[in-house]
Each structure stands twice: as C-alpha cells, then as structure tokens.
Amino acid sequence: MSGLFAGTPLERPVTCEQCGAVLDACQCPRDSTGCVRPPASQPLIIRREKRRRGKLVTSVQGLDPVASDATALLRRLKSTCGAGGTIEDGVIEIQGDHRTRIGELLAEAGYPVRVIDG
Image 1 (cartoon, rainbow, N blue to C red):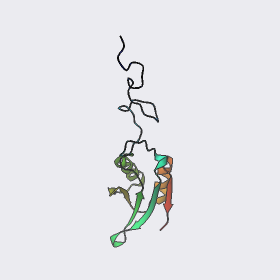
Image 2: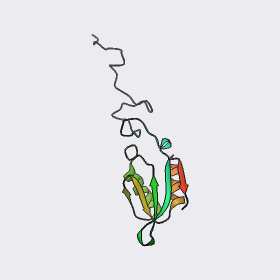
Image 3: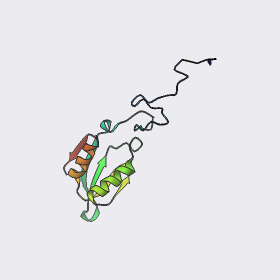
Image 4: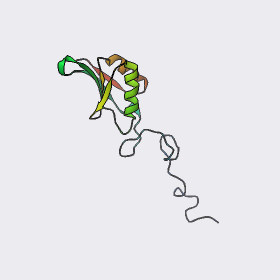
C-alpha cells in the first residue's frame, strides 16, 4: 500500500544540486545561507603588510569562513611556509613575506588569487 505522497518529489530526501548526495551526507562547501560556494567563487587577495616594529605579515583576504575550513587552511599554510599565523576578523595572517608561495598553494586548491605587491 502506498502513502499519500508515494512517487512524488516530496517522498524523496532532499539532495545537493552540486553532487547529488543527500544533504546530511553532502561535503560541498556552503556559505551561511546554505548555498554551495566552491573555491572558484571566492576570489582571494594576498598582500604584504607592515606591522609594528617593522614586522612583515602576509594576509589572505576574501575567504568565506563558513564555506571553507579556514582553520585547516591556516594550518596548511603555516606548515608550508614554516611560519606562525592566525585568523583575525576573517583574515588569515602568516608571519613574514610569503606572497608567492601562498598564492601558488591557493591557486592549486582552486581559488582565484590576486597577489598585490606593496
């Protein structure tokens, strides 16, 4: 015996429009509204900044903290550059001038990158 909604879209579980998996099992990056936001739609700006006492910091701006795992990305950047770093106000900061190395790493991950000299 079939139910009231048997064979209709209401009977099936909701699936992801990107990968087709059930939303509970979907691994696609999503922003705070629930829309899929892949790395290709997050343009990043990488720049060098000078801090107090003349220290240089490389900052990565434009990363959506909800749609991407910013802490895992920070950990990967720190280990690749061999430097310390942090996330402040949604901006990843790595100690030292590592613009080219970070730009290459993020471009390989699929992010559109713009490196600003300064």
